[in-house]
Length: 167
Figure (cartoon, rainbow, N blue to C red):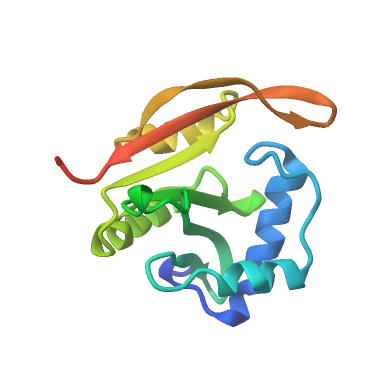
């Protein structure tokens, strides 16, 4: 087992990012998305992540184990200081500390890019994810009841946040 490297994602990582994202979609633990994504979709998504909105990966022995991204929260200028977080770990790598490494690194990137807050949305039953976020100072904001439709059932979604500055 090699050392885990956290680095900025590059174009050659798109396929690995897509595969890990699709695992999260199929497993129904991390997103309300229900349709797996093709390469074209992910390439377009990746190309929109530049400047302040970055994508990073966790790599070990030339294999991508997970990724994290800062996404626009809202297009109104009042929300320019708020980033929405995406974080996905490959099935075989979950629960091994990779999410924490990615979360620490993406938070540093957020601070360097003048974000004052990170928000995320998770399922209330995703205890592994919530444990990770809480361990890094995120707090539960609340639960949106019946927020989305997943496999024909309405599901709740939990909002969490972390303030990066005291102001």
